[in-house]
Amino acid sequence: MACFTLLDDSISHRETIVLKALKKLFKPGNTPAPHQASHIEPAAAPVAPVSTTPAPAAHKVRPDTSQEQHGPKEGRQRQRRQKSRAPKPPVTPWSIDDFVVEPAEGKTRFHDFPLPPSLMRGIQDAGFSYCTPIQAQVLGSTLLGHDAIGRAQTGTGKTAAFLISTITQLLETPPPDERYMGEPRALIIAPTRELVMQIASDAEGLTRHCGLNVMGFVGGMDYDKQLKQLERKYCDILVATPGRLLDFCNRGEVHLDLVEILILDEADRMLDMGFIPQVRQIIRQTPRKGDRQTLLFSATFSDDVMNLSQQWTVEPAIVEIEPERPASENITQKVYAVSGSDKYKLLYNLVTQLELDRVMVFANRKDEVRRIQERLMRDGIDAAQLSGDVPQNKRVRTLENFREGKLRVLVATDVAGRGIHIDGISHVINYTLPDDPEDYVHRIGRTGRAGAKGTSISFAGEDDAFQLPPIEELLGAKLECIPPEEELIKAVPRRQRSAEEKAANDAMEAEQAAAAAANRKRSSGRDSRRPRR
Picture (spheres, rainbow, N blue to C red):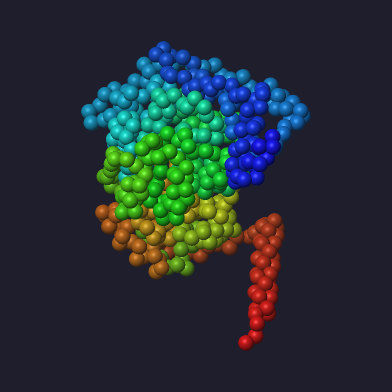
């Protein structure tokens, strides 16, 4: 023991933690149970799906440095919760013969690739029959283990392309013999919380019958709740934003040394948002690029994106999908030439006179989003906002309410609105034109989905009308700009507010006045402390 004490005094804090863990690990009776395979190879005959992730007790786990202990009361509560769970529904037998897709000229079926039956069942559940162009090209290379970089717009099916490839590789490759709880085998990095949650949801659907565990980590949500996922089960596919993933890595909860597949989605957006330094830190913790498969996707192939791909991939297959038209033919596009002072009146009258029930409104700045939403609510229109200032748990509730029709209008910034996939959005309104023409395409793509008709309405004012020519150049079409009818820019009727609304408004104004007074006082205090010259 004296030797250990001398050694502890001469090594770093991190090595001390490792040494303590080794002492604990090699105490008598603490030998970990042998590793079990994390999945079962698909059988030829149809079998009931079985969760192939082994129980945590059968695996070696990384030492817990939190010193958290569970008392007997909590253990009894956990047992009662387990006993009260409803019985699982009976499993329906399934075979590949139940998934019939006839060959079609010029189309590629998922049957044409060697995909596991359990994954094929998930593909059928998702309603897929034929591959989109990017899916056919990506799967042709990635299923052979090659790296790939793909250029494709949103809505082309790229998410399903890299998920199907990843799931296939994980099912066909046995996991390491020794595996810690916080070691994902596949890592997907995306720039926004909404996109991470959408990818994780798609992955859960495709892996429903595969016995693989999917986890999504984003900022703005309870860290401890996300941590408990790692404590309960092994992580096969981890989808995360760069900042939250670094939080887990820096605290020693997630370790990336066993990552077999690395996927970077919307690399151009991560460049724009300044995430690349964080992404570099993350990638340095994964195996070398020759020892992992790397897939990179971007809406554009700029010089910066191509430089990143050279650093992170090895002889990648390059897949470029040129959309026939940047904007769907299902979307009717209108542009109103309107002064800035009339924009809100036009928005209000469009929503009320056309009786719109599910509308997305885009603005360029967070303060604009907040003001628009507050004015709509004041004028009796159920609206919510989506921006970086909104906590993640509230964002989730907002999207769910919008999806269920409890909200008429969702006002969002480009970053917050990216990756939102909600069917039934009839209109997209660009309150301000975006600075980047690509964002215009992403915005209007929120409507006209799944073959439905949609309408895009843009307001071109004196401050943003100059953005129209670049948008028209990208679209390859001229957008007719017309003045709104007088009826559409009439004054918003003053609404008699209830006593509760008036009290809430008075309280908000009082709070704002108090905050302004406090700011003036602090500013005055700073001025009084300045030395006189």
